[in-house]
Image 1 (cartoon, rainbow, N blue to C red):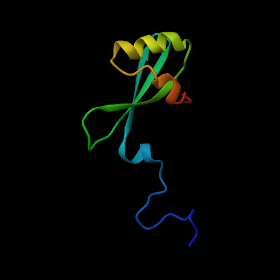
Image 2: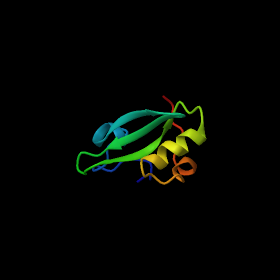
Image 3: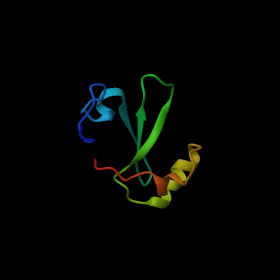
Length: 79
């Protein structure tokens, strides 16, 4: 069996379309992208869009209590 062939328990749909919904939060310096998981409480920062200033994004993350290291570890997503 090929390792690229989905098993009967896997879906070929992108994960975010099956179980999550994305929320865009405009802030100074860009847009924060969060995903909500229906089986969990809260949301998770997954990336950024429309970045104009990484410094201002860093300040926005800090104001929300999110570790500023996220600017180095989360991707810039296509909007």
